[in-house]
Structure formats: C-alpha cells, structure tokens
Amino acid sequence: MLEALRCVDLVIPENCWEQKSEDVKEFKIDTFVMGDDWRGKFDFLQDLCEVVYLPRTPEISTTQIKQDIATNKK
Image 1 (tube, rainbow, N blue to C red):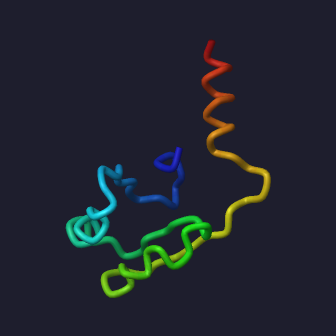
Image 2: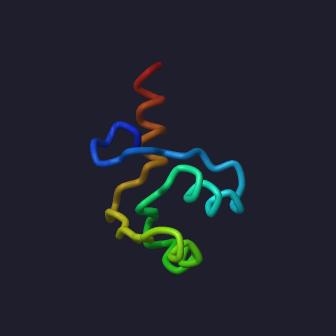
Image 3: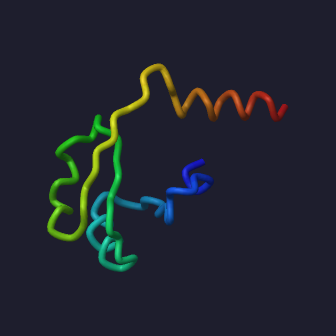
C-alpha cells in the first residue's frame, strides 16, 4: 500500500531491527518516516538522516483495511 503513494520513493522490508542504520546508508535515505506511536525509538538515526514521526489517523486501521480487502477478494 505504501509503494502506491506518489510521495513514497522506496519501501524497505524489515528483516531485523538492526538493519535500519545499514539501510539508511546503503539506500542513501534522506528521510526516515514512522508513526508517532514510535516517537523517540528511531532518534538514533538522526545522525544519518532526517527522522519524522507522523501522527496516526484516528479510527483508521491498516490491519482492518487489509482484512476488508481480503474479504472482498473472496
């Protein structure tokens, strides 16, 4: 779903928590974006790139959207 957004250049699958610093370096990431429920957890990346925490949209659940899509495919 994220890759479909025009403002998103790259989505990197996470295999392990420790890969983030290496991914930022390898892919020359300018901005790392995460939901604000993770605020402060990625500040360690600030020496490598801009870290932005976006507010969650109230009453929107990505999990629910995925379930709805799966149900509608049946």
